[in-house]
Structure formats: C-alpha cells, structure tokens
Amino acid sequence: MTPILLAASYALSGFFMKFSDDEFDEKNNKILAVILGIICGLFAAYATVTNIDAAYIFIGILIGNLLGLKVDGVHHIATLLTFLIIVAIIGIPGINGFILLACILGAWIDELGNDNPKVYSKGKFFEYFFDYRFSMKVVILLLAIFGYLQLISFVYFLLFEIFYEFARKLFEKYLI
Image (cartoon, rainbow, N blue to C red; front, top):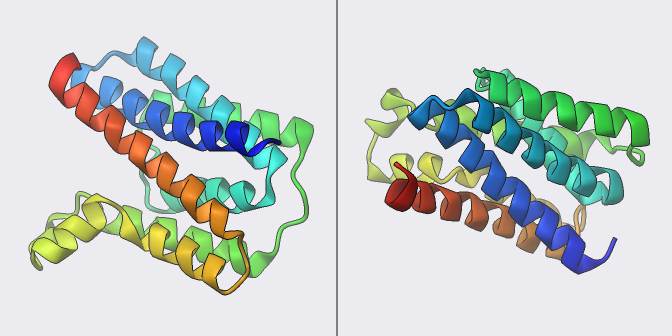
C-alpha cells in the first residue's frame, strides 16, 4: 500500500467513525449512522489487511471498545461486521501478541476513562486526557520509539485522531 492510501485510510476511518457515532447519538439517525459506520469499517479494514501496524492499532481499538462495553448501537455492529468480514476474507499478517495486547490495553483504558464522571471528577487533566483518549496515543508512540511499530504509524494514527476531531467539530458547528 502506498503511504498516501494508508494515511487516507486512517484519516477517513477516524472521520467516519466519529460522524457515524454523532449521527446515531445526537440525531438518532440510525440509517445514516449505519451507512457511515460501514464506510468506516471499509477504510479501517483496508488499512488492517494491508499494513501490520494498522492491524495492531485497529484490532486493538476494536477489542478495547468491546472490553469497554462501548459497542452500544446498530451503527457499531455494522462497522464491526464490515471490518470482521473483510479481515476474515482477506486475512492479516502474523500478529505479535505483546504488541496487540499493548494496543488493546491502551484502547481499553481510554474507553474506561472516556465520558466517565468518576474519572473526570479527579481534575481537568484527567478529563482532557481521557476526552482525547491519550492512552492509545502514548502506547503507540512508545511502541514506535522502542521499534515495535514504525514511527510513521504514530503519524498515521494522529491523522486518524485529527480527522475524528474534525468530524466532531464539523458535526457540532454545522450538523446539529
């Protein structure tokens, strides 16, 4: 996969993930949320089946969300099924259990802290840290620094996050 296609896959999966979630949660538009979720699943699966680092990151996010009980709508199920079907058909390269576990833990910690009043009551730092899900960013950066992931994968993940936030701001400003 070319770096541009991989970067676009990360960015667009982040954008459509948040857009799908906001359509479901804020507008209760289940049909559009499902369509956007499927698009997200397509981009995330494409990255996963073509790049081992993306596989760790996106599978980590998937399992972390499942463990955090954040798969809570039909749009999430559509995204999950789209992702799993493509990954099952095409397959992924061999996975290192340590790297995958680190990504799962980072995503799970983020989901446990995100939108959690008990955590947010501990102070503004914790609210900001978990609102923007910094655990996963720290894990990916550390894995890259220690040579388990490519450093460019951290940059790609930041694109995912930037476009996720861009979708949030776009939705808040123009679509609500």
